Every structure is written in C-alpha cells, then in structure tokens.
Image (cartoon, rainbow, N blue to C red; front, top):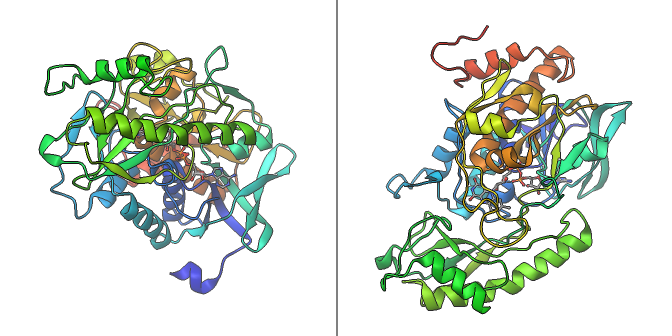
Length: 441
Ligand SMILES: Cc1cc2nc3c(=O)[nH]c(=O)nc-3n(C[C@H](O)[C@H](O)[C@H](O)COP(=O)(O)OP(=O)(O)OC[C@H]3O[C@@H](n4cnc5c(N)ncnc54)[C@H](O)[C@@H]3O)c2cc1C
C-alpha cells in the first residue's frame, strides 16, 4: 500500500475523525476525489458500532448508488446464497463480524486512506472559529495533524463539541434512547429458524403464545432484567448464530466516565439472564452460548448538533425534498427505544416516508472547517431516531467526504462551498439525488 511505503503525513487535505460506517464512507469518498485523507480511530479496528458494537443487521438505506450498496456487496461477498431477510424494518443485512473487520480496513487502505488505529482524537486545533486540524494521540504520543477540512464521524460528535458547536441532547426532557450491549450466540438449532426483529414482529412460539408477550411477562416476573421487555434475535451470515439486541440501560450519561462504566457494568450483568431466558423459551436456543460480545458500549443517542438546517419530524414523516440534497430518499422507521422504560417510546416504531437530507444538515452552526456525518448530523430527536441507522450513516458519510474533498481542492470552508459541486460529484460517482422529473440545476 502506497501510504505504508511513502510514510504517514502531518498535513492532509481531509481528516475524518471516527472509523464507523459514516467515517469509513467519508474517508473512502474523499480519497476517491483525490484528497489525501486520514481516518482517525480510537480503537484497534474499523467499523464503529458495526464491529466494536456487534450491531447488526445493517438497517435503513438511501436511494441510488451510495456507499450503502458498495459496503453491503463487500460484506456479502461469498455469502450470496445467504437468505435476505425483509421485515417491517426493511432489508435486514446480516453480517459476519470477523470478515467485516478485515474487509472494511482493506476497503480504506486500498483507496489510499491513511488509517490511524489506536489513535484517539484529543482536541480540534482551532484558528478562531475554524477547525484546522486535530490533536491526536498515536501509539507514539500526541501529534498535531493539519487538514483543509475535517469530518466529525465520531458518533458522539466529539470534535464538534470540543470546537464549541451548539448541540442538543435527547428529547425535550433531556432523556436519550437507552444504551445496549449487543452479543452473538452460537450453537442455535437451525431446524427452528427462530428470529424476532422487535416487539411488533408477530412471532409465535410452538404452543401458540406470542413471543413478545412471553418476553414482557418474563420481564414483569423479574426473569428478564428491568426494562428488557423484548429480546430481539437477528440472523447473522453464519448458520447456528444469532445477534441478540436485548440488554438495556436507561438514564445513564454515557458521555461521562462514571456513566459509561456504570452502564457497561449493568449491561454485562444482564447478559446471563437474557441467555437463560433464551435457553428456556426460544425454540432452538436450548443449548445456545455466548460467542462474543461488543467491546464498545452501544450508545444510540447523545449529541445532535444544531446545523444550518435541522432535519425535522415533519421532514422525515412526509418525505421532504431539498434543493441542496446530498442524500436522496433516506429511509428507516422512527425507531425510539424507550428512554424511560422498556420497549418503544411511541408504542411501536412509527412510519417514515423516504426523505432527503440536505447539505446544510452536515454543517454545524458557528464552527467553520468542519462537517458532521452519521448519527451526529443536525436533526430533531425523532428525525435522529430514523437517520441514525447504519444504512443512512453510510450515505451521510459519503456526502460529507465528497464535500470535504471539494473544500480542500477549492480552499473554501464547508459553509462557503457551492452545494451544486457536491451534487455534481456525487452524481458523477453514480448517486441518484433527484426524483425523475427533477434535474440538478
Ligand atoms: C445497541 C444499538 C443497536 C443498534 N441497532 C442497529 C441496527 O440493528 N441496525 C442499524 O443499522 N443501526 C443500528 N444502530 C445504530 C447504528 O449502529 C449507529 O447509529 C451507527 O453505527 C452510527 O454510525 P456512525 O459512523 O455515525 O458512528 P459509530 O458507528 O458510533 O462510529 C463512531 C466511531 O468513532 C470512533 N470515535 C469516537 N470518538 C473518537 C475519538 N475521540 N477519537 C477517535 N475515534 C473516535 C468510535 O470508536 C467509532 O469507531 C444501533 C445502535 C446501537 C447503539
């Protein structure tokens, strides 16, 4: 790889902070536009929630050729025969976590991205209100890396927050969606084909009882931990394996060290009871055992930045269109895991209409030189509950990466950049941004 032989740099065109779905899409997209691009990740593997968080399936998507299609094809190579599961949540793209760790890193390196692993971002380097680089801590020690444009893909919006960008947290009462520690079980008897995507999935047990009711009753009896009123079971790409999304920690401030440690401890305490519940109640799970668990706390919601446009509840519900669209027809349900109890906040996840995401939602107010992406873009609590999923994060990452590369080429800030140029570049790369009757203009 060229970056290994030539050596790493101190000055880049684009730096992307955070190597999750949004960061990978941003870095690869920027590099493909010819930008010298660094991707900074605090952990030893890329993938963010997808790998470190053991989160699967990939949910949500955007229309046209986006990084979503490319990453799904990449992760499914060799598994073409695996069953495609479609539910009320849309296509559920199951994964092989081990393959994903390797393939996502390879994707970045083969596209010329300078990948920094084991390298947390410490702080943005500021010149007035402009981010001009990042102070990072490599295994060698602290280093200052400069860039013409920086993309925040840290999920929590660490860079934007440290830079002083305004943000909101949670819904009106400040409560956020709960944290979860996902894990994978193996030794599942496949003759039963048992899975359940959520509380509104009408799955029944052989004795005719509804599985979601059995979960609720077990929670009420204390057999399942408090607030764990549904044990979601998703297919992975491996026979005999399932991904379990069930543990739940409400009310922890995961942005504080004490809150993160307390949530992690509570969630690990819950793994045993959830497995015991599965062995007792889920057909085919009698001899299941934990294969692996997330190495990063699964945090659904923290900071949402106030951008030049705040994507609203109505936008997501009615399928808004914007002249400065960078993601076309993003779609996922409004999926609010209850911040104040078990199950869903609004009884069940609410419908959304495929909606556009405008360039302005990637630009934080007050701060220059910085683009948002993934789960930290600008939107309301309910809009976030839709666009936070990985399928959409890949698409906003792509938009941010292309915009960052153009900013570097033209020596302008994201706020100064003409969004038509971003659209032209995205379309050139195969994205579809407009409904049939509209043209870019
Ligand atoms: C429990 C749970 C279940 C979910 N279920 C699903 C699901 O089934 N399907 C789905 O599509 N989505 C699901 N989601 C949502 C989805 O996983 C996330 O919203 C999505 O991964 C966001 O992508 P991202 O790239 O913005 O952030 P992340 O995936 O969080 O990636 C952020 C990256 O930034 C890195 N980082 C953070 N801070 C720093 C720093 N200071 N320095 C360097 N690196 C840093 C992190 O280590 C991480 O690699 C779930 C989320 C959770 C928590």
